[in-house]
Length: 95
Image (cartoon, rainbow, N blue to C red; front, top):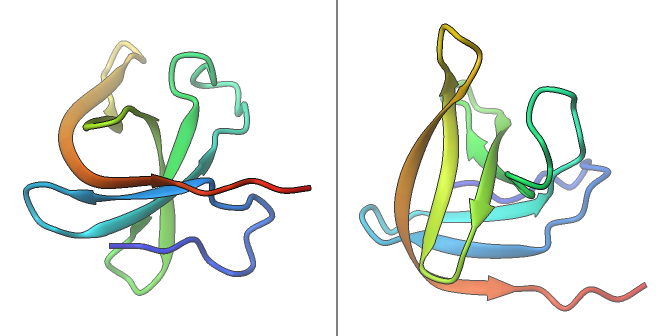
């Protein structure tokens, strides 16, 4: 479970719960970092790093499923997990 940290320069654009664990995750738009295309993985989810901090993972969030990059293979390609999700909510973005 992870909410976006208050100090983040990127504002969260939505949230969802994992169907398997029930944990809540927030996500923001992916800022291009040179490793993965923001077209292929347009989101970054916030996850606990198990040291008390918050980390991010590249992702593609759909209505009922999220594709999360969990690692990098030896050849540099992303290792992706498919997470079934529920209670997906997109925030209203205002400027």
